[in-house]
Image 1: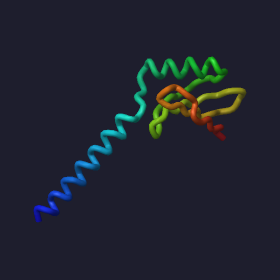
Image 2 (image 1 turned 90 degrees about the vertical axis):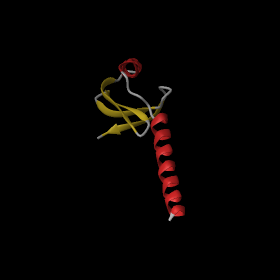
Image 3 (image 1 turned 45 degrees about the vertical axis):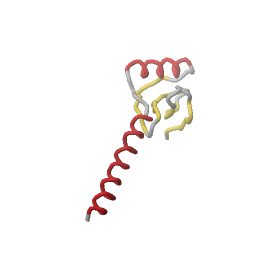
Image 4 (image 1 turned 180 degrees about the vertical axis):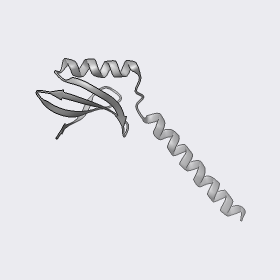
Length: 86
């Protein structure tokens, strides 16, 4: 039974460590970051709406030339993906 308990404890610790690393590598949305994203996208001609985080990226909902977009940025504020919203 002790071998089983040790294996179970090891699995729990591995999962906990993985969760901690995942949250540390995620992006943090602060007022300063929100302002930085909004300023950058506005300078590119977007009207910026809601900004949130999704899957380790910043996600901004924006409009440009009458179309709606989802703009994804990494932690370095680089646009990594732009998706036109239908």
